[in-house]
Image (cartoon, helix red, strand yellow):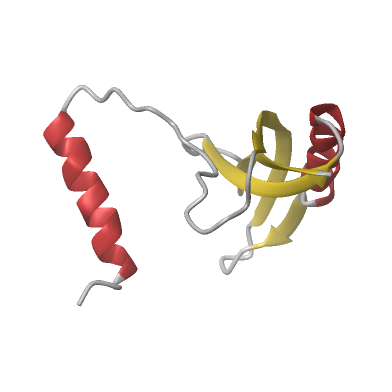
Length: 111
């Protein structure tokens, strides 16, 4: 068996959907014999995780599974193994760096 990282994409629709489009990208760990098997398992995970519920304002919220956007095989599961990467080419490098520092600070784990 092999380990894969699958990127699942969901659309989040609140109320009547009159808002900016919102998508949730999830990275899921999948164990399968082949990439095709991993894709099939990831599809099943996506479909089974669709949901509808009422938010705290009593508005309907839908999580619609869109698709499996990526499948990446992991060569080794060990401390520090790279699970995923995405190269960004922002128009403003300083703004991107500030965003990364801000996100890190929100974790509240620095001493």
